[in-house]
Length: 296
Ligand code: NDP
Image 1 (tube, rainbow, N blue to C red):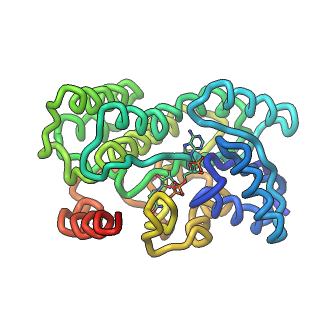
Image 2: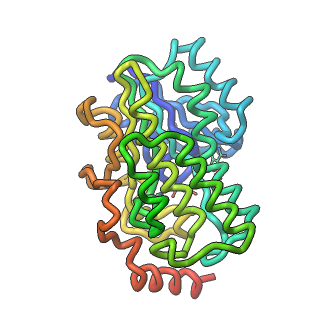
Image 3: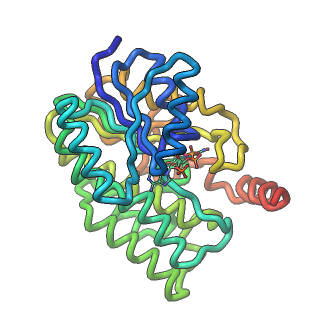
């Protein structure tokens, strides 16, 4: 039994659910399965209990300050804080090739801007040597972006939140005003989602430098996993996808900070704009998109 308190956001299904299961099976004493919808969350806790696991449940909508504050107060009062925080909750756009400004903004609000609500209420109660894992994506690697000005601002060593906020504002404004240029991006499929995950990885590079208490913060590509988000395409089950996040939470050296971790536990240089990834290969993406469209 590992005497730690762990929290996984958006864990009523998918990868988050797999992470909760893995944390429980590794003997972490208190694991919070959280969900924005109480019914869905409690149902998932019941499912895990039937398998012999004993996660706790708490409501948590990462975009709702009141919900996050309430949960933070609960954790402080009941446990004095937390040791492991896995920021997993996210959404993807419905239309693969195009998105409206409203939807792109929503994707940014849930996937990127919610991180500041989490930072405000949950970071202060993180214990000494705590670990934070920001679940990003291969679609969040810097090679997804081709605009040199933004690549330079996001990859510099002394990046600040303002750089990322400016990037997100520029992206959203370009959708709103119809000024978006395809050549600024490697691939335009799921573009708002891609750019939200670029922002998450960039933010991780700020957060790890600013936080004290020897806390480690890393971002992660969890692999291509069969979940609702991928319409159950992928080469990993949710159970398999829980392994690397839990490795980062329990086994990895505390000195690993501000890195972009791949699902096989290796480190990928997030700042390398020339890294050839499958998610930025136009032909591969086109094949995947064609498959998805043919199924809908
Ligand atoms: P799913 O869509 O299966 O699950 C997403 C989870 O996030 C659900 O529990 C959902 O809750 C929750 N969620 C959404 N919005 C909020 C919110 N405002 N507050 C709290 N919870 C919320 O996705 P995956 O499991 O596939 O994805 C998990 C993470 O992994 C995401 O960050 C995703 O971007 C990332 N990822 C996934 C990949 C894959 O191949 N599956 C590949 C790369 C990255 P609800 O049920 O209420 O909607």
